[in-house]
Length: 235
Image (cartoon, rainbow, N blue to C red; front, side, top):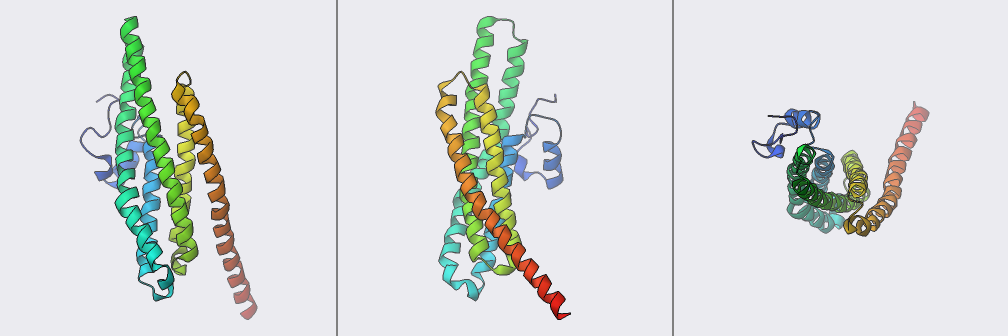
């Protein structure tokens, strides 16, 4: 199998053992690539959020938020997580096809066929960019859920909430990087100009949620400092 061929020709990437999947990302191939990595970050966030929800639902002290956690858990499990899994696999497969088409285009000597291959590769890149935007949209929602979980979930597992927030934030940032790069390649298409505002909207949403996320960091840092200072005073 040549380097540009599918790394997951024998089945779903997400069904692979963790080390093998990580090696796939680091194997120097186009697939799985940055789009799938962004989806994977979103999936990690989703899993951490459901963990916080499950534990918080078992705590009487968090009873006032049980309905919220039930809603978040159901939404993540039944809607967001399955969609991210689809996007992970779809991006890996379709971007690999983009690379194949580019290789065929560069080798082609027939002008008409070369033009067709170029168009086909850009069409598929456009589809992959749609995947990236959707990954970002989902991860924006996950950031919001993670912040709610941090502020209202069981206090002893705010580390889990923090990871959920951070992973979702990284997924959004990664998606913005990828989308902008793809739009640059698609610059001669109306699709590019139409979606520049979408990138900016994501950036604005990210900035707003980052402020809330950093507030969570400040909260836990202050608690840690106060606890250590109190311990020193008592010792």
